[in-house]
Amino acid sequence: MAADSPEALKKQLKLYAAIGGCLFIGTILTVAVAVVPALDFGDRGFSQGDLVIGLLIASVKASLVMYIFMHLNHEKKLIYLIYGMSGFFAICLYFLTKLSFIDPIKYVGFFTGGE
Image 1 (cartoon, rainbow, N blue to C red):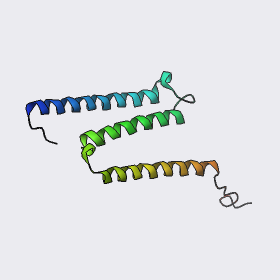
Image 2: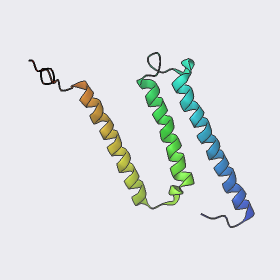
Image 3: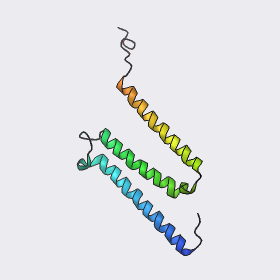
Image 4: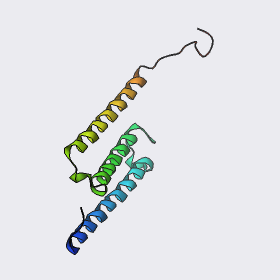
């Protein structure tokens, strides 16, 4: 998507500057959620709530980079299907990992030599 005129170039530069500003603000928000007690979600200190909020901010930032800087907003539908399936499987892996912590396997006696 090349700029054909000076006006189009200025428009693209404004868009890139705005997205860069959003990425900078998102980075500040991510750090603030991790270290500022007033923005503490969940338990005191860095907890699962802080992690979820941080990952949501990171997801929005990654989407902005993909769509604007990598020019994926003008791709074919197959690209969106591939990215959507990747996201779906990443979420499935997350929930499978959470399920493994709910009912862990106990190796009683195996490592200690006893029963």
